[in-house]
Length: 324
Ligand code: HEM
Ligand SMILES: *[C@@H]1O[C@H](CO)[C@@H](O)[C@H](O)[C@H]1NC(C)=O
Ligand SMILES: *[C@@H]1O[C@H](CO)[C@@H](O)[C@H](O)[C@H]1NC(C)=O
Image (cartoon, rainbow, N blue to C red; front, top):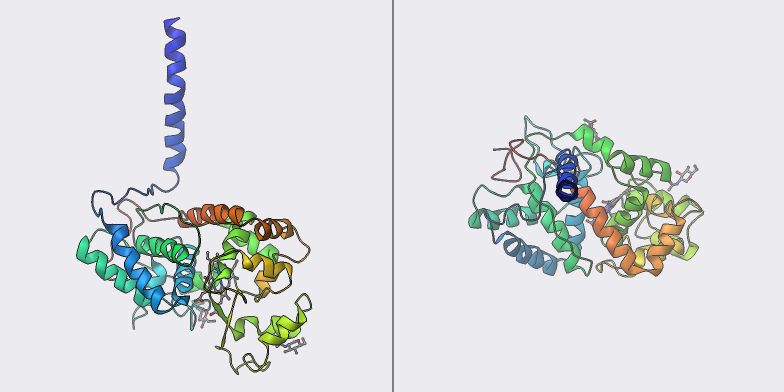
């Protein structure tokens, strides 16, 4: 009897050890990472994000995108934040970022506030992860506990940024294979693309779609053409249009309703609802905002887990724009 009961006591302990082993192969990130070393971290970040979004609502979208562009290029390691210098080429002028990625000054302001509170403790990569969550919440989206403990890269790669972030000309296979390669499912792809419910895109990224594609609502296409986005490449390339035509500063599920009405702005948006395998996920999110919200949260947490630097890897940058 005694041995039977001690055996059954051992089962949860064994299960725990197995989980510990499995867990140690992925990141050791945790929401409590700074609870002793920087207890007021979250309260320090949020008001800086809030005031930036108050000044310009789109900034919330720009920060969410920066986090994506960080995580997809060699993991969430703050590499996207590094400036180019005469002897160093970072990622800011890579094809997906040049004339496009923004929000760096906001990250600088947050970093300054955090350095005043807890000098030398919190990574830029973690600051970006928290700011992306806060931006989502401030624009009306769901919240989650941000896992922390990432460290900052001492390198960056323009070539990796060119190759790792999918272009808006991607087809569904290209998108799913890129996401799958990073451990993100097809469902994560659709849920995370839902962040195109906020923010803006430049004419150069939707010109071919609004002039030449057929799976597009014709009055929507017309609205997005001239004068704002002339057909000739080179003219008006940087002119902006909202990714979600109804509520571009509200994090809701209108993006999916638009896709069903063939009003996706980017080619890579509309491929998610074009008679293929992801149509049913788009329908689910369009009619069920809470399913979208919980899948989006799950996707953001998974994306935030991509190849972090931890332990003694990398560094805690003093200034997010340069290595120490
Ligand atoms: C699925 C593949 C994706 C593609 C091909 C893609 C492509 C793009 C493009 C081309 C733009 C407009 C950039 C410009 O014209 O300057 C954009 C904007 C944006 N993207 Fe994505 N994106 C993808 C996934 C994501 C993900 C996963 C997120 C975040 C979780 C995201 C968040 C955003 C946001 C918030 C904006 C608006 C940024 C602003 O207004 O500054 N995107 N995306
Ligand atoms: C990345 O893409 C940009 C823009 O197309 C190009 O100018 C640059 O040379 C590319 N960088 C690398 C390292 O391939
Ligand atoms: C539309 O397609 C035609 C034919 O392939 C091409 O010549 C033209 O440049 C395209 N226009 C845009 C705006 O992409």
